[in-house]
Length: 240
Picture 1 (cartoon, rainbow, N blue to C red):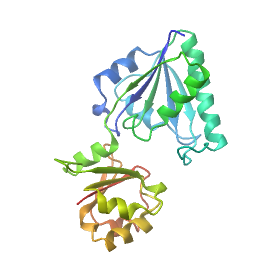
Picture 2 (spheres, rainbow, N blue to C red):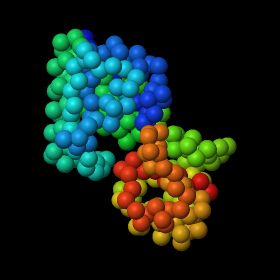
Picture 3 (cartoon, rainbow, N blue to C red):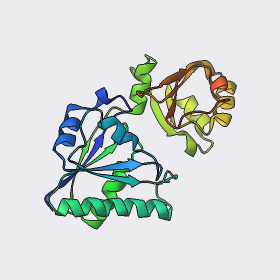
């Protein structure tokens, strides 16, 4: 294989937050494999990068990745594993033909990204495959910038949790860390808000929806926010 798979972080939504290296690789690669959350929907990652790099002349492969929970040290749902393998096969074919492939992923690839599952599956199929990871601006970094607050300073400790996985230890985490970032909170506000109220942390918590994207919304009244429909891209920063 002579091609390389580049997993590129495209940031939270603002196309001006793409790195110079990301833009260069997107221009140079012959193939873009872009993820879709819904079979019939658009690719959010593609919509972001297409504002900076013209996809004309590229082979753009839109691939559906089911949005189901993945727990470490447990096998994924069969449809999730099948999606990873199908994507890896597409990549392997093009790498073998000498083509570079870019896989754009929202935010930073190192933080809850499908990109690493794709890499892992590809390397199982083709252990000699060449893979490069290009970091991007994270959603939580963008959210912190939007509310003009640091995530951590000095000897602060920072914890990042996917809110949908919360297993009852959130109270302990909130007690032991100066800053807690909760990702994708849109479906669990009914249990997050009462806990934050009980711990007298509601006034320390800020909700950011669609950070870095058009229509970004910042809410400091979490009780009110919890009573309306929220966007999938939703992050709460709790800084004590």
